[in-house]
Length: 225
Image (cartoon, rainbow, N blue to C red; front, side):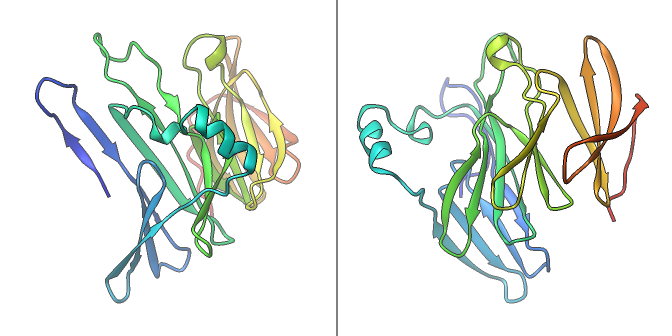
């Protein structure tokens, strides 16, 4: 699985960070390649590794479209690929991240969200949960997906979208506002919301997404027990 930072000839620097996730019991670790089509499963007790090729269930219509337009992971490689993964309570592996092209001057092109994907380790299949997100937080049986503002109407924030561990969307809040999930405790999440230059902390009920309390903005450090 490719990882690291390197440069070939006069081309731009390449940077790849595969995702790393550890099972809830700590017996296994998973290293997910940047394209998410290869996973190394590491037995942390026996120090043995097995590689799994991950496939995506493909419908007849998707096969037809792929003849015209190659899938995103088969297009020209980007210059930076950063991934994050976490094992959910049901054993599925959630993967997200972003891709960034090298530019001159640096950072003149916003990153492209990789989306949020779920890998089923029972069948080693992958499916998209949210193609617009680039980050998630797991809290109280919910997967909270978000994307920060990257400039332009097409790159506006998506707020917070909550999915269950099966990948079904349960609720959406704060669409169009910059959000940061500061942490979670019990059945509540603490979300920083910036809208029209004003920041507030919303205490959300994870089951419904309802705001149960708003707090003045301040840096929070929440411990999830």
